[in-house]
Length: 386
Image (cartoon, rainbow, N blue to C red; front, side, top):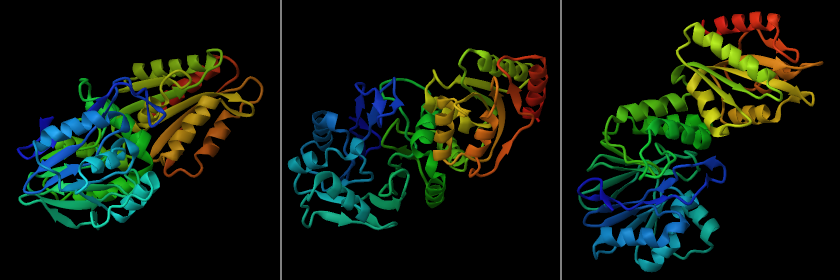
């Protein structure tokens, strides 16, 4: 238990047993499932936690309540890592009113069957308020950030924005690590497809005076909030966060890798502010997706494979397209011993993407890097730095 303000208490838990978040994202430093209590004339509990931490969470809740009983359970997001303990909570506090929107309660039925709340169900609309006494809560709908029922809650008294999954990150709270790296990987992995929806809710909250951001994952943010909000604005508008080039490659016998590394060396020699490089077959795919969105220019280097492109490169491009990849410049290095098709296939995969510019020249390697390829790599490096 930890005080956020005089009246708001953190009662979340840390998960170090998890290996894959949402069944796919590697989380070496675990995850935090955040929950909060607002103590006033009436008491509101903000969300529950994952099913694996029922007793720990209920213990934290009892300590925060200090003998009192909660009046409201506010459900901002129905994903099971936040909603799993609704039934257990109501078993212990059956008189509590559950607060959500219409979509919240539809999903609640899907997860828990015919949960009979009777008159203990409060359906709120976008912009509606709820008074706890001193604390006035405003509900701000944030559909598709990243589920359709998601809503934020703004406490106008303590100037706290409860932001559901927005502004969250991978990693448990008892591990020290930089916010931006794991928040960026989290955002583009989980929320990235819904940039327009994030932009919409950022506009809704722009006029609010916010002193603290309490998300459902990651640390409570209390300082330099403009930094976090500006990053979210850049990410959700598909803007460029960092100057530099990201090179993503796949290689069977090392020749395409050699071309990619040669380009990296040439870019660094020409003074490129940052060159990131990744072997898509061996590195975390989510990290590579993150870097593709971080930089304004990327280079895709891959072999021709079964008349198409190497499977890890295909998966990578599919991941980008699923997240509405746009506003980027792309260079291509293809390799094909007898019939190179990689460049054509790559360009075709981005046909429906917005504002994608392909950089000439395409470097076309036939098996191994030769003198003509070195000249092409020189030209590509110079174009990338323009």
